[in-house]
Length: 502
Image (cartoon, rainbow, N blue to C red; front, side, top):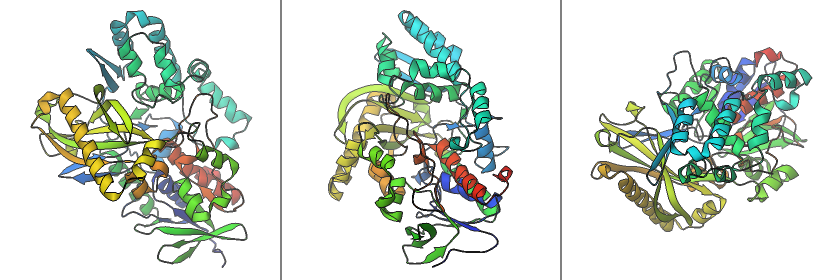
């Protein structure tokens, strides 16, 4: 079996998520023939939305890093069509709100407003509040490198990055060696202690949280109107307009390897397609476990997958509801205490609800969609995975009912004005996206543990590249889109093509 040898080389991309679509678009721009094979009926991977009872449920975008014009990541989003000249952003003025007892506090987009509100709530925490706000301002400088992979950086690249993010070392010095639980422990007021462990798992290194909040305060983390599915559809349109071919409902059985070189793919219906290069844009455990075999998983990958304590993963049990807008006047994402209950053997006494009031098209007139997310980790995934089909269905229904009950306790005006739409779990992400342990992001970056990063190549196999959020912690959309671009960057460099094209 021989790989193609046409004048125009061919790339096959396995997986049509954000990374795969990005690789396809940049590949076409670089002059390659590109085919994308996606197992689901539509592209998008975990950047997805679906409809229930006349409502649209958005699975992914809470905010999109890289929306600020002039940043390198914004240019990538524009290149792939995710953001267009006339793309509108939701009018949201906050990151999220935490309610603890009788105290309500919000992290606003306006950082000065945040500082004022926090100081009013807890004057005794003035030193830590001011320190936090100061370092969020420093973190606003953080701009994810998107021109080329960092392993290809030269001295001038590092000098430029250092100059543009001169204050980031201050953020890392103060918050890079503690986790969010320790950061929260610096504050005296219980509402602030809760606030800083609400949005991300408490095991996350604290600097990650500051960078996330800084994207909001700097205007680099907006929400594109229409949500995840609309953004994916724009990318598909862009790919196909460039002449790329997308094959949905076409699962790949394996990547064909001959003489230590990737030469093509075989689909589950036993069809063989050859190509000069293969890009794997699926979950990396799916790649190692099924497409190429675990014998190609090097020690670094193995150590991370085996050690759930150092490199944990998280997912969620989520539920969506339709409510009457006239009785729900809250805005944005709200965290609140609730009567304790168990989901996936995990004790839960605090939950979050996100309102989509800024997306009127997501629900019938006079209605809005509310979504609740209960974090789940590796052990909870294993719990859900061990259930029979009947047990799974029963416990999912019980989880949705428990969530609804707690929404009614917190917002009693919803009584008689709320309707269940859907519930999904880590098993849902595994089933539809082949997500390892149901994770929708990569390895959590913990304090004292080296942040995971690999080049996006597979040792021992030529012409096989990885374009996936899994190549760099903590994953997510920014890593996925740059990974797609970088895979083409590596291929183009190998072929001595002009890198200005990619």
